[in-house]
Length: 279
Figure 1: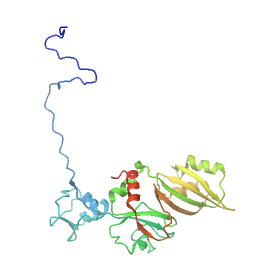
Figure 2: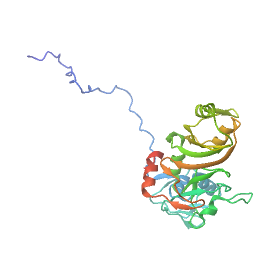
Figure 3: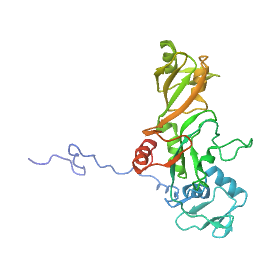
Figure 4: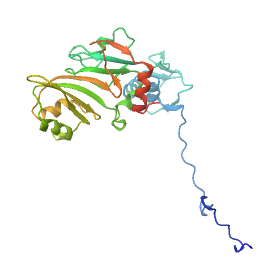
């Protein structure tokens, strides 16, 4: 059969193939602005990636003239550098990439989650005296009256991903309350409550066990707002007697003694990183 296609026309595209289109005539497209490659980062980001400090801390160091690149002091917090070749120093001391460290602590009650407390109270770093903790930061917080699983790391990317609400990494708590909860109380906690105009909710609330006058609940959060569980209970006129974080994602507090610190195993870290969006 002769091809009935008219001269000057293109054959129709076969099934499953995209038809080819010629670009519409017009002015040449402008080249997109060149983006920094994978080795070029801002100076605060470089100090963070090297595990020296957080980006916020790095910006303060830079502004105050403590940071030099190639021997030249840099005070511009938006300066870009080549991370692969730049020689960075802080107060004259060279900064090199640190080995990433991942620790877990069973935080005792009465310690504040900060390195230096203006009121002179004991801090979680008192438990890390046997570790080189100069650049370790807590991954999240537990308030003074709370206990349990607290992570420390100098891997800021890992820490930020684990804390990002978008990753939905669950934190599980065992909470002792000052009464025996009825079904309506448990349902109210599951549905969410309002405290000081803010809606607070838990992903899961279960009754663990009851005594004569009080009970233990298991509460799972994915938000992690300030004093969230205590505030949720306060909204129902319930007092928190004890609050213990027992798990972060698949990482369990287990039998770690109060005040004790240990490194995460490779298996534990591998289980946490996919949950946090890490590599």
